[in-house]
Length: 147
Image (cartoon, rainbow, N blue to C red; front, side, top):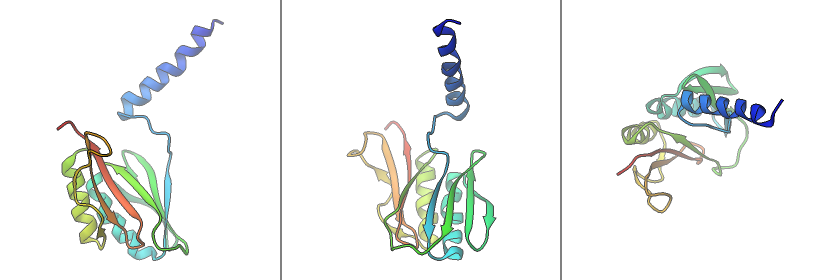
């Protein structure tokens, strides 16, 4: 077998993954530790709804998983945690979704950490909003749009 034959399969597979998902992600899932399960579940259910996430798995009163685009990629787990320290950035489809995330997160008890807006110091097309969750973790929604 020639080396070129061996190399073509991964390239085709990667192209399929990128085409199917519109991007290639190396992180399968992540978990945010929370101190109050019920409060965190209510917060994330509301805040992530505008980004397309739904609560799909629950192991109450300890853990819950949220799904978007057919994959449960974000989890919360109740564990004793120090206040704050965590950061998660969720990809939004557009600026409107970033704004809706921000409004929903504040309405669900989050605290402002940066209103929706362009963050040119990050990238010329980095549009994001930031909130602190009930445990003080920095939660972000971001999209990349040409302006």
